Amino acid sequence: MSAQFSRRAMLGASIALAGTGVLADRAAASPSAAHHPAASATTVPEGYVSPDGPEVAAAEQRRGAGPERRVALTATPSRLDLGGGLTVSSWAYGDRLPGREIRVTAGDTLALTLANHLPDPTSLHWHGLALRNDMDGVPGLTQRAIGAGTDFAYRFAVPDPGTYWLHPHSGVQLDRGLYAPLIVEDPKEPLSYDKEWVLVLDDWVDGVDGSTPDSVLRELTGGRGGHGGHGMAASPAADEGDGPSRMLRGATSELLGGDPGDVDYPYYLVNGRVPEDPCAFVARPGDRIRLRIINAGGDTAFRVALGGHRMTVTHTDGFPVRHTTTDALLIAMGERYDVLVTAGDGVFPLTALAEGKNASAMALLRTGGGAAPGASVRPKELDGELVTADRLSPDPSVALSAREPDRTVLMRLTGSMEAYDWAFDRKPYTADQRHPVKAGERVRLEFRNPTAMWHPIHLHGHTFALAGGAAGARKDTAIVLPRQTLTVDLDADNPGLWMLHCHNLYHAEAGMMTVLGYRR
Image (tube, rainbow, N blue to C red; front, side, top):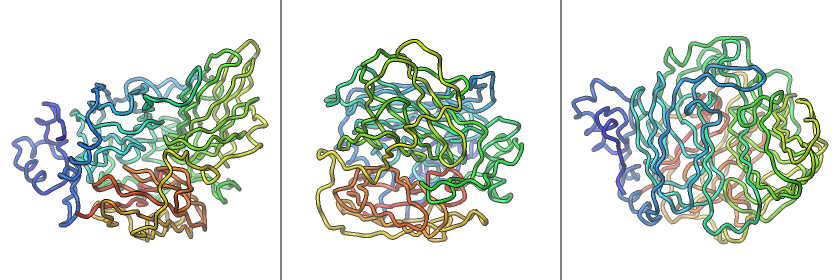
């Protein structure tokens, strides 16, 4: 399947797909290209699969082309109501926070056109999906950035059911309001439940007392912020903010091995609402409810519990696990968990504790009468039994087969809070980096973290098995604790150039990104 473009996109030239020299030449030859410059695209080194190459097209053909689901999305400056009388100026998908949920069925073809009404270039990454490489949404690697005033037509097969989400891969735009849930329904859904509740967790700074994510990055990097780890310099439009210091000081978390993060956010949200004015989900006592929980935060892990209830974990990062009952979950940035609960009778707080940051977000489950708990409520379940990803086992239907790795890729996570020089192997990201793999290989990735900071590592276009073998849960985002090593295995079955990075947004923009590249 070839990449699809709208007529406007073709005329704009600035959003042409990146990849081979042929594509770069086409863009340069376009009459309008000189007048609409784009973020530069990667020239694929000899011997590597191009994002729009025949190997990628063949993999997409194997996925098949199911019924088409058409969606129009607009990225635009917005005034967002966060509740409790708090309104902020930010960027969002439409006028909603989170953006409107997109729901498709596994096997569908998603055809989504993103119109960029922002003052800056943007992009759209489909977090967790094993999709075709030229639709992955990484400017300078898999596509050109979507220029201000232009649009881009994403089109790809959606192979796997589960809980996913979408967000830009452009500078620190994710720490504005540019995110939305993507729910892929299973046509053979094995779970039985009465209702579904999608919960998007976030840490919020944009538009508060003059702060922007760009000013936060600038403070963290000592003035070196805005260099754009994706090769995109921050524009004046993105970098107007200033505001008070947002550097987190004196915080600690035993769960995260010490330092919980870098940013002291003024607010923490569930579904775009502050805890003083929370969103509420209405159900009946006895209802079996599926909670789909997404951490869309920039720098915050959340410890999540539903007061008065035990939760049964059924999925992580879209893939099923052996059902595991718990009181609370630890969810890093980019991770998703699905849980089942049987609703009690009353009003119950769903509390997302900003781990180590002495603050929380909250939503309400309402099944009967009664007063809502206060914003600072701390359900006892938060201090009860806790599930982390390493305690989960995959459902047999998605477990990797037992197999020795054909290749081991060792990466050291490097950097420090003082220098803010986060990277892999002390090499800040450039789009020409390649960690080579070949299609058909079982690949072992070994992440050694000698730093004093935890890092949630995310791989695009694949899921891996934790613990370096078939026994671990299938994930696309996993925590590497300070002074620890995480080993994961994956099957190299989706050709292209795939971003691998820390999902702490500020670590990534400081340089903690690299590329897993398929060799021909």
